[in-house]
Image 1 (cartoon, helix red, strand yellow):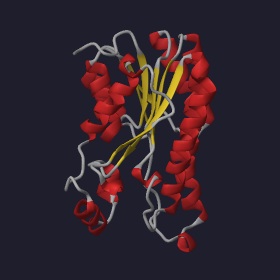
Image 2: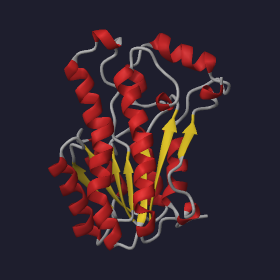
Image 3: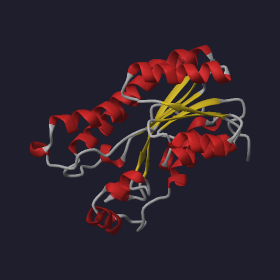
Image 4: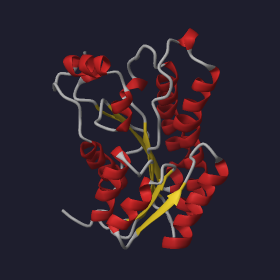
Length: 246
């Protein structure tokens, strides 16, 4: 099957690397116009790689004016908005709750949770004007099970799941679907910054016995972006190799 996103305009945040870049490539290959939003600058090279139908924008997802400009760029350049993948995120400070700085806590909440809120807030009017759409939010298996020394990350991702469900209930009548993806350990820049003993322990506990490739998450995002998932909203999809089963 090909052309699964023909005629759709999409925004992907955190598109410069990891899951975001893998998803951008998949969406573009399936016919979507893609707005590649990132703060790193890496989105520029990816836009050049993809060519026609790809637009790189600088976006700080924690800032309302930046997210609003991101959505406006999609509408002005490609004529509407049908898919938003709120994917940008950071792991943040690794520390026990009592040892975590207030600044470290706030930074993770601003990017991982506030960023999703702002994406939904500013995308919804554009999607309504376009006849509806699909919003996909990156949560985490850390919304389901605890990871010591990652309290801010776990809290933010738990918030993403409930924000997803609430927005899904609010906008279903406007033909906007909202779902979340909860990846397990994926080979991305975030996992490269985690302590190796943590990664080793996660793999040892995982029934599948490995961590995932970003492309595996992109495949799920493609399904949720496409009309194949037209009757699915308010759901959170674990893609964790069975880690949370045990």
